[in-house]
Length: 324
Image (cartoon, rainbow, N blue to C red; front, side, top):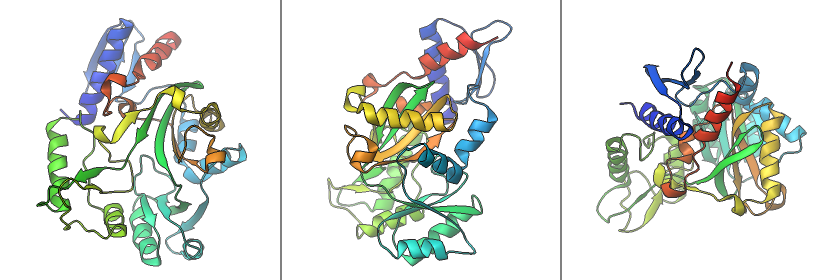
């Protein structure tokens, strides 16, 4: 069974059982829940809560970040550019700091390369991003840890702290072999250890290089090595549930307003901050992405599954209440 289908099937079957309604899967990955002539229809994690306009706006990273800034939400500095004209981006990185290059119209980190610090980094990452779209963005990389907050109609359903995928040295194996072993473990777990494998791409090469390593480096036994800067390929061991009490009311309000600014009912807000007990503005953090079709598995595939937020239950309850 394909991992994404297996994990989402388990999530929706558990939610249906908790609510006490039937569930069927007449077509691969398509779930019909609630029975009757008008069951709730869901494809993997995609629901009917939001319309195409709002979902399209969330995919337009340049426009959505502009709307967030206009709404007073803290967002990283962004500079639009294209592969044929790198000057705006080159001028920005010449001022120092670490940057992210990403396509302007994708989600889930597709085509994004963090850790861009030099002209060579920019050229390579721009070519990579351009495979996913002609319009590109250079975004100043925020400092701190990354979090995903999930909202439904303004209500916070759950939050997770996401770390970059890492491997632990054994004193004998090269990084690339440790990554291969981790990928084998994830595949054997059929999704329960994570839906994606770790790829040695430009993100990995830059992250390892910034720490004086390469895929062929052999880390000492017990040393943890961050393989990538991006969190998109993190596994269950790289995420943990965050209790609502850890989050400041100001930060939650900022994230909530980001969903509202894009007109989204169900939204996964990705943010980076060094301190979740303070507002984003006060801590120097920012919202890096608003997801209109957020993966619910992020809240289930965590290192502390006993504390996982069962976010599919309130989502299903809302869908059932509104059907027909």
